[in-house]
Image (cartoon, rainbow, N blue to C red; front, side, top):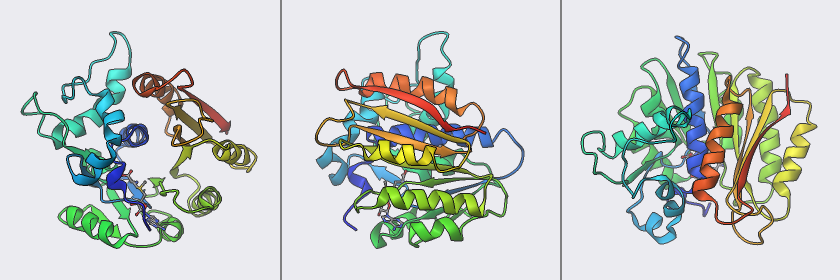
Amino acid sequence: MNYRHAFHAGNFADVMKHIALARVIEHLKLKDKPFRFIDTHAGTGLYDISGDEAERSGEWREGIGAVLDDGKLAPFQASPGSNLAGLLEPYFNVLRELNGATQDESRGLRYYPGAGELARRLMREDDRLVLNELHPDDGAALRQRMFRDERVRTLQLDGWLAVKSLLPPKERRSVMLIDPPFEQVGEFARLEQALSDAIARFATGTTMIWFPIKAGGASDAFLKRMAQSGHTRLLAAELLIRHRDTPQGLNGAGLLIHNPTYGLDQQLELILAWLSRQFGQSAGAGSNVRWLAGE
Ligand SMILES: C[S@@+](CC[C@H](N)C(=O)[O-])C[C@H]1O[C@@H](n2cnc3c(N)ncnc32)[C@H](O)[C@@H]1O
């Protein structure tokens, strides 16, 4: 396990994934019943972007750094009349709170929340979080960070097995994020299996799968197979920062969502179109949101 998320925290792919997650959580909060958030590959839950790893890679600068106004965590402004500001508010409020910017408007970004810390700050008293991370050091950091919060359970299991063992949730309402590092061959096949497992264990939960878009067409082939898988209620969202076949590097990021919360398709259309303008590095940048399989 060589991958360490500290190098990538706050990059464009994190921003996309975390804004989408915040939208799902906000929707689940509309009902008075508790729900559970499960992150099968959770990282450390919180990152210091002034730290050595984030500074060395600098990825956050072209991610969250590119959407902040002059580096400051000012309240988010969007074009008048657009719904965008309201959709982004919960995510930006967590960033502001975490960095002390709600008291001091001039504060910039130092701490970037992983999915765990983001969810923890958005969730209510009776909601529950299960954060699983296999790497011994990152797992220990996660536990250290979260143990004071009684709503959170941290685990150090193989995330692919955790998909099965953590479902169905006691609350009968859940969102599961499956966000592997893609450092081994076969991750797309594992994701397919994981989605089938999740659906078999708890068909009505929301499952969010993250995947990279690189040259070679592996992500296109994955989506094609998923469209033919027989699973229903599958939404795919892609964000490209340059043309999808640019030879090296991460050209974009995608989310495949089973049982998306109501209205998420339209929300993501707005959000990703805006993000592609913030992050876009060339004419090939853009976004698309489409149903692979409906009801
Ligand atoms: C992309 S990062 C996760 C980021 C996190 N989900 C978030 O949004 O903040 C992927 C994580 O998976 C962990 N990991 C790798 N293989 C794993 C496995 N088999 N089971 C659980 N975690 C694993 C890595 O150590 C890494 O921290």
